[in-house]
Length: 145
Image (cartoon, rainbow, N blue to C red; front, side, top):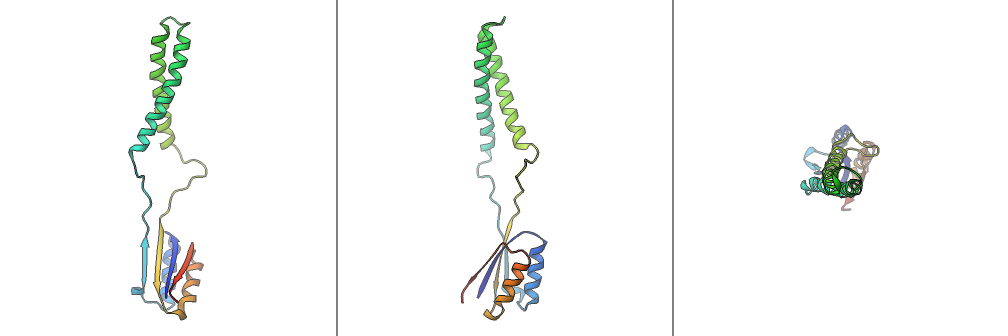
């Protein structure tokens, strides 16, 4: 019978493995696999998003600059260009600061999961299952009968 448990990578996992060995399962019948965290599939996407936000802010500030420029000394074209440059800089900078800023409330760091596969006789399956649950297994399943 195969018992499969899913754990968060922690000290409790090490304790669960020790408990399983103490229950009579040999080390060669235990397999622990660390699951890779999903990395950002497109690292350039964050840069692209910053440019898009900069462009949006540039458009908004250009419109405001042109409208205000009709009443100012340098005219609407110059104030539109100033608004464009200031808006792009502000939007791009805000996006970059927001991505690299302090941890926001509600977000947590991802902890890799570890899948533990134990091959054991049916007589010991209950003890192994209890050892996994006592030590904080997120889930436990079985294969075979």
